[in-house]
Amino acid sequence: MKDFSAIETALRSIAYFTMEIALESSMPSYSGGLGVLAGDTIRAGADMKVPMVAVSLLYRQGYFSQRLDAEGAQLEEPVNWRVEDFLKEEPARISITIEEREVELRCWRYDAKGVTGYNIPIYFLDSDLPSNDLSDRLLTGGLYRGDRRYRLCQETILGIGGVRMLRALGYSSLTRFHMNEGHAGLLGLELLNEEVKKAGRRSFNAEDVEKVRQMCLFTTHTPVPAGHDRFPMSIVHKVFCHREDFLNMQDVFCAKFLNEVLQENRPFKTIEEAVQAGTTLNMTYLALHLSGYVNGVAKLHGETSRKMFSDLRIESITNGIHAVTWAAPAFRELFDRYIRGWREDNFSLRGALGIPSGEIWSAHAAAKHRLFDLVRVRTGLSLDAEVFTIGFARRATGYKRAGLILSDLDRLKDVTAKSGAFQLIFAGKAHPDDSGGKEIIREIFRAKKALGKSLRIVYLDEYNMDLAAKLVSGVDLWLNTPQIPLEASGTSGMKAALNGVPSLSVLDGWWVEGHIEGKTGWCIGDPSHTHGERTDGKAEAESLYHKLENVILPLFYNHREDFVSVMQHAIALNGSFFHTQRMLQQYVTNAYFR
Image (tube, rainbow, N blue to C red; front, side, top):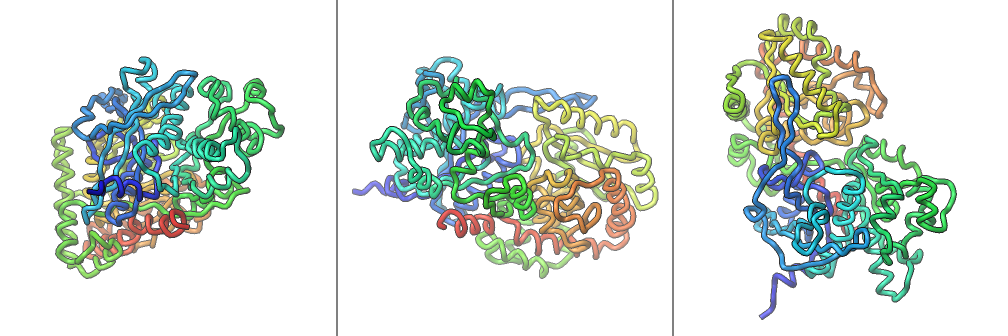
């Protein structure tokens, strides 16, 4: 009798590599947008029966658990979770060399099941084995933790270990390797090493490089410099010293791709010479030059990336969300009644224009009460569901500008006095090493205290998938205020739109494509600024106040039918397009089977 599971494994052709992935809210395998997008992509792939497999790392301590004290100071605690409650251990074992030590790896499997029952396996690499040194067992301990050496070791496990593990598991027909950010860039070196071994040579040639380029694609998810990993060659040499496969590929680091990878102007004959010169390995450049297809994650981000890497061809595929995952229960039920087949065909959500406006409002009211119940349980505060509520939830870091709406507290009081009350709900974690991000949270707490009863502010800690789902569906308006052009895409506004929550946002990321003034939401600032120019924060704050005072609050309180029409168009125009079904179709057509 044939082993159909082995046959099905062998037929998988696409490997998706990501440093983080959000599959369940209580499974701490993600920190933010990159992981949430990865989870949505894999769920869409399962719905569409795309022959994929995914690889990530197993973080036994997760990212971190966030607690906020009365002043808004962030306290971080490790996340302790039972891996066995979520994942199944696989028997396969492989090893990689790190700092002259053999590090054994195992993997754990999670199956993402689509609407038709099709599964996509996700494998989590784990170094916590008794055969390894204690320091090596901890290499897969925490997400985005540790020093540069620790991070490079993790990326070695993901890139090199990930390819080897897939081979050990029987994935023999993989034709595409999708790198998300430079974290997995080293997989290209492992593929080069495979080509060298097949040919029985000691070093690779231009033909090998071209073969690998045809197998690899790379998605850059951020225009922020901190999002592009760089490692000093002193650390690279330490991690990879005496690795024959690495030494045979030193040209990738130190000669052929020198100008792009190391950003230096002269070649080096040896790694040691590069170390002495103080050069750095840029993982983004490595991934870029070992990929035959490269894309940004929104049209504007594609333009920004082409400016950053002007010598390369960079396409754009705008991100999306997994509609079934992010639609609130009340909206899922509503769509089931009025839009037949929407779960299998998200484009059919344009039919939301045919749903009676009263039912849209009732579903929204249910989602709002669900959020307010959570706020009451978490904080003891009872918010008034009749009051206009604005949501802002994302990573607490400088360029996201969570505090822009709080720039002028007196002006905020004037807005509420003239046009009606509103309340603000914030959420988001700051990276443990981001002191500026932590200060942003404290500033919001200080503003909350200063405003008192004039304007209610709630900051919810421990931001995760479950909280995000309740926030994007339960507020009346979704606020987005990044510094242009630093938001690559953003997807929280897409989730809000799916639930009939319009956005008030600067024209950056996906909103450049999704914004229709007064139809799907509203823009902050000059609508002619759609080409990534940096803008004036003070002017943007005043634009924000003006829109609230003169357009949005009057519409909500005095012209409810017109406000519901905006909600309806947000679903029909944005919800029906900015989803991972459309996004993955573009990857399949343009990249996976090119």
